[in-house]
Image 1 (cartoon, helix red, strand yellow):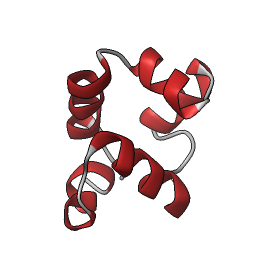
Image 2: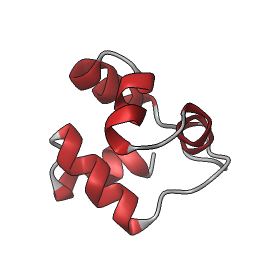
Image 3: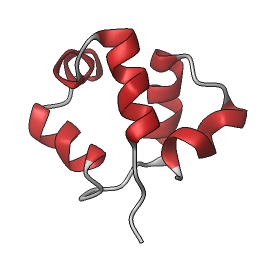
Image 4: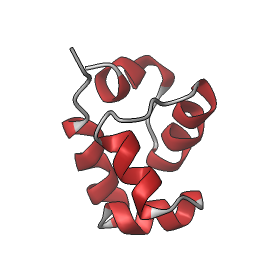
Length: 68
């Protein structure tokens, strides 16, 4: 069963107003961002750490955002 990223999407919108803006900050294309958010490509450990720093997600909350 694939992960769902609804909480992560909400946090991105809350902090950056759109996935497009967050993708720019990350240096990702909109296509790459879309693939990650739709479960077509996975998140590396480095991705999780980088995204969490930018989104103010504590390590103890990684499961809530990345593994639901």
